[in-house]
Length: 336
Image 1 (cartoon, rainbow, N blue to C red):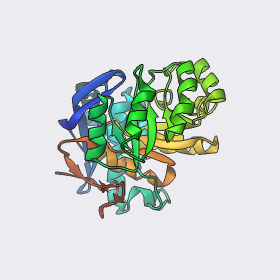
Image 2: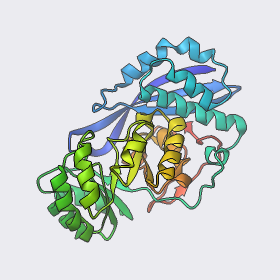
Image 3: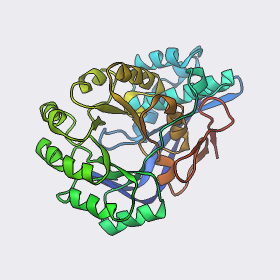
């Protein structure tokens, strides 16, 4: 195989803020793997919360470039196993794993969802994320993109009032993501009010390691709770089953599609709701997520919609959330 790495700086349409950070650009790594004239593309974005930079990922991958290019590639699963033995971060493994899956599908001339024995319809509609900001700014973002489901980023002392104000401007379903900013008491207190305001579920209200608090929330919250920062890798799924109603898998955090597929199966076996989320990826990463749609209850794959300028073509998300799958096999990705 031939390996190629390239860093991109993706400009966002608007400043994106959550409870712990704000940014106007998203750094991302695009990996391409080439074999027999076919090119597979993968992606992983930088993330300050997990201390991941594009430069770090590139250095990790460059260190084993010769081994990657000489690897006898047959399946993404075998390739992923090889990568896990090389002490790479999960983010770097994700970029390579996504490229391997896209390449594999293109070599077989089939989309990934078909290889996995699923059909693309029906599928859950992605939410559209409204970052934390002044209320007028949040309302303006909703008006700019009318959508059936909004994920609202919160984490202030005035969160319920923010939702009350937003509710005046739309009948859309709300999902709330506090990104670890609440306590158990706040969550239990806020939940009934938010339920009355048309909120579907709460995503990761407590700090990732506050398992005692999450146990109290699980017994007393009137809204379902979805794990995000508490569910990073495969080993976390079983523990989350005792403290959450569902899990939100991020491909970058778990190490790509290979472990994500196992995590989804485990979650379903444990009776958990399944969700996959994005990390403001371009259409490269979003197209990989889209292959999992038939296996999901919820999805957050609006990353490319938040960009001022995209770098790839693949799946398209039309206004209102309808997904158009590309004619290309694999994840269906081409770089612009």
